[in-house]
Image: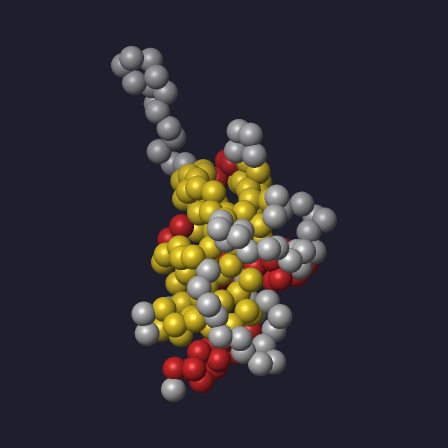
Length: 168
């Protein structure tokens, strides 16, 4: 559609979605902003014996026991040193509260469907389960994560049982 001053408007049919963009190492990742409840500094967590390595423990968030997942470990990336930029993104995933540790938050980015490309075939089948695509922006690319598929059903059930045990 063209306005009377000659400028083009955005296609009304284009679906625009907002993503919270965060860093893990040198890469940028994005998750649906609607899943984000809050962003917090790295608080002390209580380690859970015999939990998966990527589950760093649980923390008490205003009376709610929240499992904390280190995304570097979940994505099999080298360990990072926590610094002043390291944060926990608290997510609401299907009525479950989960925290993810990331190296830092970059920004909130709007993307339409034309900016999202499929993940390359070289991605492993495990990772393709939770990768939605690659957001291509002018000067950078953002790996888009389907955060609800980050954990298998069995892993979510394990986390549920961990939080219930600590809530009692």
